[in-house]
Length: 87
Image (cartoon, rainbow, N blue to C red; front, side):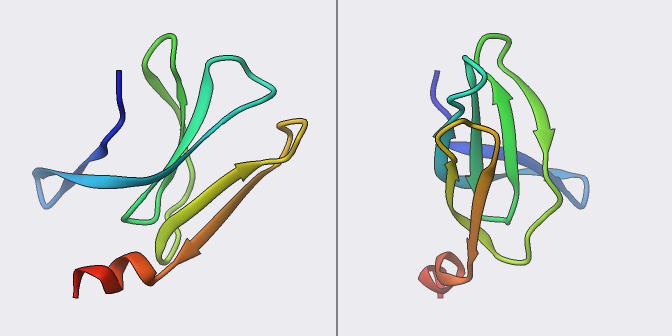
């Protein structure tokens, strides 16, 4: 399957948020994290196709994600540049 966007609910209506980056965990097989245009980073389990964790919202879009070489730490880069592209 592919992740093209995150489904979000706002004001009782569903809309989609584009995924800007994806990083696969070197520590947990089948786990990966996605970062979206609305500032959310979400960890997923590929086998069960379920969301495991959604981090608190960042003030800007999640532009980049990266695990350290052991998979113990996750770096999240948040930037306003994706919002500027819409304007």
